[in-house]
Structures are given as C-alpha cells and as structure tokens.
Image 1 (cartoon, rainbow, N blue to C red):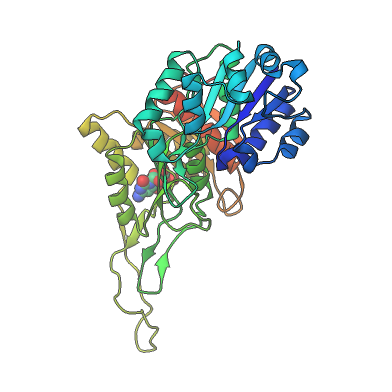
Image 2: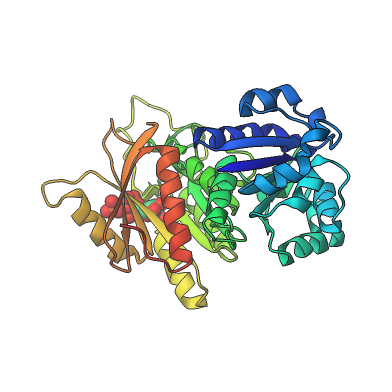
Length: 410
Ligand code: CTP
C-alpha cells in the first residue's frame, strides 16, 4: 500500500517513528509529510531515513512534480498522527496552507486521524466541533488514549499506542470505518500484587506475587483506550504511567477499595493474590521470643472473598459489569488444574476466569506465562502464552469481545 503519514507538531511526534516502522516492516511504502511545527520535534532526516523516501512540507519543493496532487491521489491511506488541535482545526476548515493540508484535500482513499493534545484542548467546544465535522465527512478520528500527558496532568489526550493506530489504519482500509480502540470509553479496575497481613508492627504473612501480571494488564487496558484504576497491593514492579493508583496492604483494605472502585467500573479484574486468611490478632508491639514462655501459636481467620462479593454486589445492583477472576492452581492428587479451575469459576460466579498453573518455579515473579481463559457462558477454553504483556493483550482483547458480546475467534 502507498501510505501518506502526516505528522503534526506535538511532543508525541517521536512515537510516530514506531508507527512508521510498523508500516514499513509490514511492507508498505510510506511518505512522511510533517508540518513545519512537527520538524521542531523530530527532524526531517529521521523521517527520510526511516521511510526511505524524501520528505518535504512545502508545496514549493519539487514543484514540477506537483507533489500535493500526486501524493494525495496516489495514497491508498492517509494517517495523521499526532493530530494536534491546530491540525484538526485546519483540516476541518479545509485550509491548504502547507503540503499536508493540501494533500488531505486531494486524498481519495481512507483518512485516519490519531489525536494527541491536553485534555482541556480535546474537550474544548471548538475541538469537539472540528472532530465532529471531520467525522461527518467520513474521516476516521480515533479517541485519544487516557493517561499521563506531557506535563503533570493526566486524562484523555495521549496519542493511542502505535500498534493501535496501525491496527485501526489497517481496519480502515478493509472497510471497517467505525474502528475504535476496543476499550475506548470504558473504566477498568485491576487489582495487582500480593496482600500482606500484619502479625505485629514488623512482621506480616505475604505471598510470592510480584504484581507483574496485574501491571501488564493495566498497561494493556490503558493501551486499549480504557480509563484504568490499579488497586496495588505489594508489588515488586512500579505502577505504569497513565493509570490511577490506589495503594492497599491487607485483604480488608483491598476489599474496601475494590467495592468502591467497582461502583462505576465496566470491568473489574481481580489479578491480586489475596490472602485467604489473616492473623486473628495483630500485636501492637513486636512479638518477642522469651525463654520463659511457650512458642507463639498464630491463629488465622478467614478473609472475605472479594471476587465473590463483587459478583454478589453486581447482582444486587443489577449493573452490567464484566468481572474477571484469576485462579492460581497447582493441581493435586484429588484433581487436575482445569478441574479445580472449572469448579472455582462456578463457585465464584465471575464471567471469565484466567487460570495459571503455579509452583514455586512457575508464574510468580517470572516474565512469561501460559494461561487458559474459562468463560461462565461455557464457550471453549481459550489458551494464550508468551510474555506477561502478550498474555495481557490476549486477556484484554477477550474482554473487549465479551463487552461487545462477540464470540472469541477459535
Ligand atoms: N480472591 C479474592 N478474595 C480472596 C481470595 C481470592 O477476591 N479472599 C480472588 C483472587 O484475586 C483471584 C481469585 O479470587 O481472582 C482466585 O483466587 P485463589 O487464591 O486462586 O482461589 P481461592 O479462592 O483462594 O481458592 P483455593 O484456596 O481453593 O485455591
């Protein structure tokens, strides 16, 4: 395919180098047309080297070739990323004051805009009207992703991930003009890491969860366009940018945070390793070893099952919400991993159960993973394996399908 990649003057222009790579590696011939402002962020030499084609932003270069007519006519697809508020306004007004806007007016094939700007600019009435104008003319304008923006602010306005823009662009050329990021407009709450149940001020009962899977899920959900809340129990890895983080320590704190967050979430994913039991008593002072007393005995009491409670609360409130549980199973002499997982899915009543096969050397803290997704609806178990990011992308994509009531591909 011949693709024109228009680059707007925003800091996210640097991410478009990865998008260009995705296009060229897929065998497409890409001509990059940066705006004047874009060249202040990424130089022409970078675009020429990565695309293998000459780069210009003026209608007065190579005038004998009438570039704006040729490029616009020949392009099978025009992608504009980052589409700044200014560029969207100029396109909506039909201006033709540089090579990119001229080319847009000449384009005969599908056109995709991937916006990036501060949240206030995206919500501004002028931008809203301009986006509606473009959409009304059949131009596909993606919703920006939510998350950390250039300054200290965060919210909708991030450039969607290069892979998502690539997918949207390819979908557009296949006639799917209504393509949207799969979780655009959805709120997803994800618990991650392992809870810690204190015994005294210095000791706790914990588990081996690193939080890597939950964090990878948060990244995948964020990249799929969702607003993400991460309920972070103890984690060995930092929380990703662009998600709201609520820090918890114990199962009881996680329960409170999860019930509050679930109230306005479209999806709740319980990826945290929650302690099933906690010490019946927490000593206010450090428990000392004393020669004159017997060794201490720790009495444990049961923690509430948060996943089960989320399902019950959803049932009572009748809200539509997708609830996803994780099952860490080892299998034993009484049953294999899948048999235990199927029983757990029934017992907990969640919609999807992601099953991990665990052992001290498997899953916990590792970077790769192999899972099975079981569905309450009874569809066939779905397998996924790879890095925790790849597995997370598969889980998030399955969640997108479930939200749209689409059967997973075999
Ligand atoms: N979970 C929860 N609250 C708990 C324990 C677990 O919400 N008190 C959630 C986990 O986040 C996970 C799922 O339930 O999504 C399964 O947890 P797991 O520990 O594997 O199952 P258990 O319910 O503990 O069952 P068993 O002890 O029989 O393995």
